[in-house]
Image 1 (cartoon, rainbow, N blue to C red):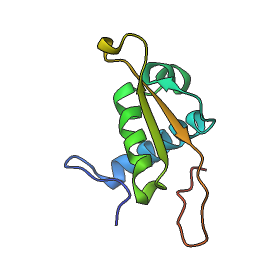
Image 2 (cartoon, rainbow, N blue to C red):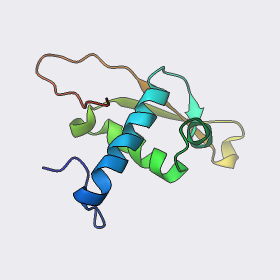
Image 3 (cartoon, rainbow, N blue to C red):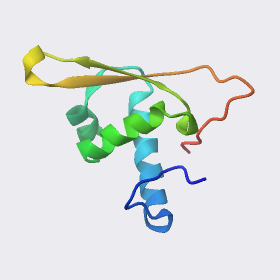
Image 4 (cartoon, helix red, strand yellow):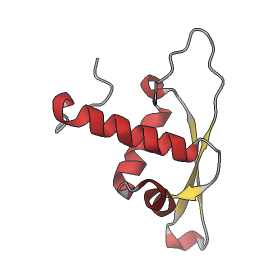
Amino acid sequence: MPRFNGSDYDPSLDDKRLETQMGKVYSCMIDGSWRTLWQISKMIDEPEASISAQLRHLRKPRFGSYQVNKRRRGNPESGLFEYQLLKRVISERQESFNFA
């Protein structure tokens, strides 16, 4: 089963790019700090839409079932959100995605 999916997904064209993006998002966020998509984008030089997608992927079992928190930032009516990735404890029975 492919790790990624979607109507336009082609493993031969997309796997390396998507795995690299996910690794960059993970490395940036695993410290548990709260960051907006814009802040993450400036740190890792990836588009905000791609970062948002990778944060959603990190919640999925096949990518490690990480806890990704989301909260409003600043004026609640502005629609600005920030995100936090929490470290998790891996049991012997759980798989872990290799971000190396």
